[in-house]
Image (cartoon, rainbow, N blue to C red; front, side, top):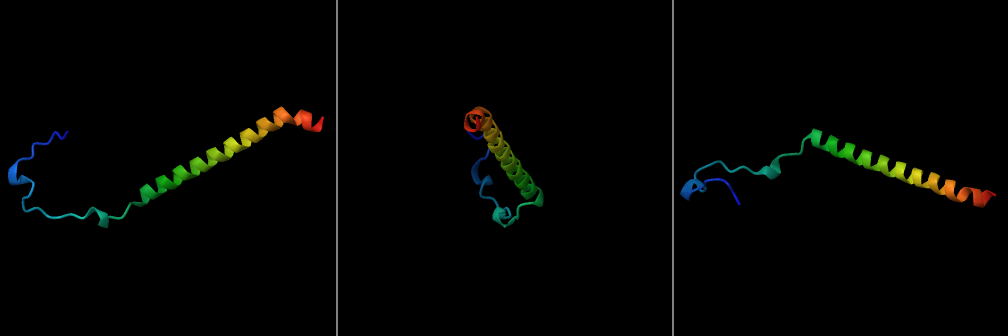
Length: 65
């Protein structure tokens, strides 16, 4: 529930109307999103490489032995 004490015509008073959709996202936000994707892709590559090394360690001696 809201903790604000809004009463009567206070909500509908003569205040300027602001459109938030007109504000472009900042470069810092795009940079942070790009950094998140780079970290995700790097983690996926490390996981796939680690899995391949583990599979080679387990099944390698029987394949080449």
